[in-house]
Image (cartoon, rainbow, N blue to C red; front, top):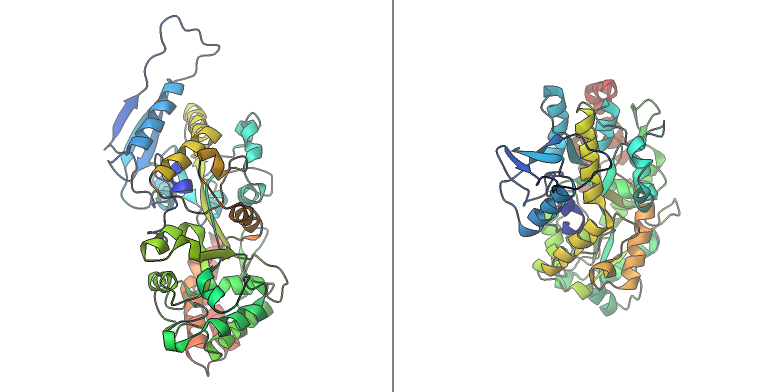
Length: 455
């Protein structure tokens, strides 16, 4: 769903490791080896490092100039390391689990937020505490994000290397035409604004509602804003279903109100890409939106200055900014040798360094691909790379990531059942939300939950 978004500021760090499957310019080889130059004669080393060959999965043979330059610098700084890059078809981050089971997984990989909890639970991520203890830079990564992948024993399993979040996007031009001077702060304002922004004669909807696909992906935000969630993660890693939690029912009622008041687009079954297009062309005035979709919207006709970003409005919980956070992080294979693990850590340090992040931003800026996304190092600003960013936007990005939440626990297993229930009570005015959500919960309990909890 984010395939056209340009997350280059934060995801390009995965170009060398092949990340979460979204990169398109990964290094190649089938397999190939690249050996750094030998240490010059007469150079004294305090401590010789054990030679190590890192096996990496990459998605392509292609390599752009920036990726090649950074790789050369890494190898020059670490002459004891060689790279064995193996082209791997498919989603590298997602396929790591199967690779570990088959005994052919790479030594390190970048995995998405969606799969990191599963990998940590399965014991296929090396705790990084010993490395972090001697790495002052760790203090410069967002604690709120790192804590998501730190287990209850205090073991840190990843170093974040990409970060994004989804809050509220709105059309400033349409707001001005409607006499609206600021984004909505709560559900009541959201509904009132949506009414003012809905103009049937112009085929303009006040608010975009997604039910054609990824339905639970957007519905969960309203459940959070109502003070609850769709599942509960138990201390032992099992899940408890809360599809009919009071917060879920409040969210369902608000959804139905938006439809009843006719402030959404007429076709709520439109696909995600079509909705972004409608927002970009002024046919939808407000919708959940991510900063890394900006260049996509601009490519569809939007003017950057017309798109505004705001914290999600507060629901009954009273808390603003409860949108979705996503990203990825580096993990090391615990089955690799100690020498390979140490080499993997050198790789992570290089591709997580402040110098690398700034170079990455400069490269993105040179290609005109800078999007307003939260930076995953707290000691880096857009201005460090010569990128001009509205101070208010930078402040918003820093604030928004504090309240953003990862998708509900177990979503990958339960999503299709919830999608059907939500679609039913949105498209059928006679459907009872509680009954539909209970029906979905009963089916999941019977068909999926036991297996999920076993895993």
